[in-house]
Length: 319
Length: 121
Image (cartoon, rainbow over all chains, first blue to last red; front, side, top):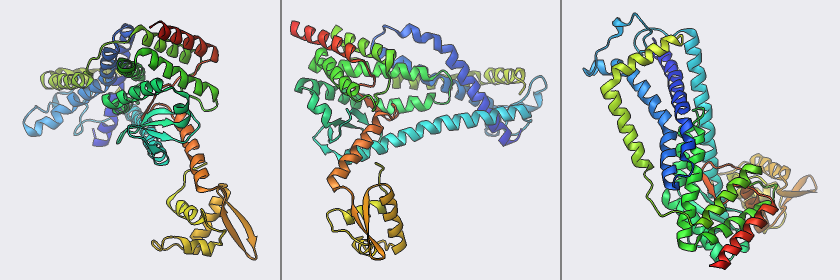
């Protein structure tokens, strides 16, 4: 198999593995309903990245003999392959359909991930341009604009942007609550987490669900952080006032609308009035490190079994 | 209103708060480095005219250009445009306090609930 053929084959192998894992973990999303927000965020972050970890494990196991043999870490067993196809950058061949499927998988992945990257770059540029047009009031940037903005924007230097219309519409306690909510996003590093999870799930069908769950949980965590300082009523008041500004200018749009948006807003207000949850440090980073370590350990211990399982499945699929 | 490129910004800076000017006069108001060709400035002014950012009147064989809006009004319009784009951008690279729309009736009902709860405390 040529390096090109192997490269194409790994594309379809990675996509198929990631999709299979995403479909396997998808039913567990329902079990998270009612769990504390911080736990939901941690589990959703891990579930969002799990398909990529599994894909890395599968590709790593396939590469292991070819890469490890010259280093003396593995035995190149290419000549022993008679009962199923061999995925290897140095030997074998890729069938036409397998190469075409691999090319399609690469194109899909690059297009989907590229779209997310473009959106992230555009958000960064919008944040920078808007901040330059606003006034830094220490802790947030006040923008002389009519649209209702109360946002955190940017990955390199995340900043809070508040429009003059929002500041004028919010009494002092509601404005303080809104700013505390946005500051919680900054403290938690939510924008970088969100970007990483979006990139991790962009090309994996079915995995975007976990980014949505993580995002809702992250909003709940930010609500709770603000409510601990200003009270849930003040946060709910801020949310409703900003939502009303958005409703007064429907042409501008504020993301999710209709029954879905209304249900989400209602759930959020009821949750805030119910008292929120005590603080709990995010542990998604630790979970991902442990998950990565587990995948690496599985690769080291069971690479032979995984290698042959992947190649056998590859043979069944006509590769 | 679209964002301006580097040269477009320099040309607008040369027009804001200044009397109407021909292409040659605008070119003379630009920073000396890097040097800009007459035709480059003319093309830029034509593009700004098509964008509605400058007005022009015939003066003999040439046009005289003037900023359509004062600098502050331009900045406000640009900020409004960028803010509107941010609202419709989606959630990549940003987080909004509110990203859902709701009917006035629901907002009224929830606001009454919040007020009642806060009054009771």
